[in-house]
Length: 113
Length: 109
Image (cartoon, rainbow over all chains, first blue to last red; front, side, top):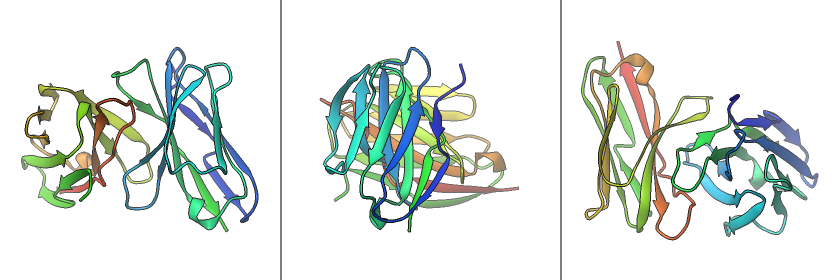
C-alpha cells in the first residue's frame, strides 16, 4: 500500500493552456474524490467516482473541467483554457467505500500565470 | 452563514495544555470527519464518527448529532501537534464532504 499518489506535484502554466492531473488511489479503493483548496481555505468538493462512474459534480466544476476514471483505477482531472482563478491545490482522496476513512494525496499545486 | 463553522480560527497553546476545537454545522449529515493538515503537507484523516465519542492516543473526538456539534480534544498537547485541524461533515444524501476553514493550532515548548 503506497498511499494515494498525485502527479505532478507542481504545475505552472500560462493562461489559456490546458492542464491534466493524475491521481492513483490506493488499490482496491472504490471511491475517488477530487477537491480544490485555495490558500487559507478548507478544501472544496469538485467531484467523486464510485469505480468508473462519476456520481456527483460540484457547481464549481465548470465546462472547462472534466474528470475521468476510465477503468475504475487511476483518475485524471483536466482543465481546459486555464484562468488565473484556477490557481489552487488540487487534492485527490480515496476510500474503500461509502462511509470509510479517507486517504488523501499530497496534491497538485497549479499556478496559472 | 457558512454551513460549517469552526472555533477558534487560531489557537496558541503551551506544551502540555488540553486543547479543544469546536465545529458546528447546519447541514444534515451521515458522518463527520476530523482531518489534520501540516503546513505544506498533505491531509491526514484523524477520525470519522457518526455518533458518540472516539479516542485515538491523545486525541478524542465527540459528536452530538441533535445539536449538530462536534469537538476535537487534544490531551497533553505537544509541538508536533501544530497543524491545521479541519472539520468536514458528510452530507446526508451525498458522499461529498463540506469542509470548514480549519483551526490553526500552534503548540509552543
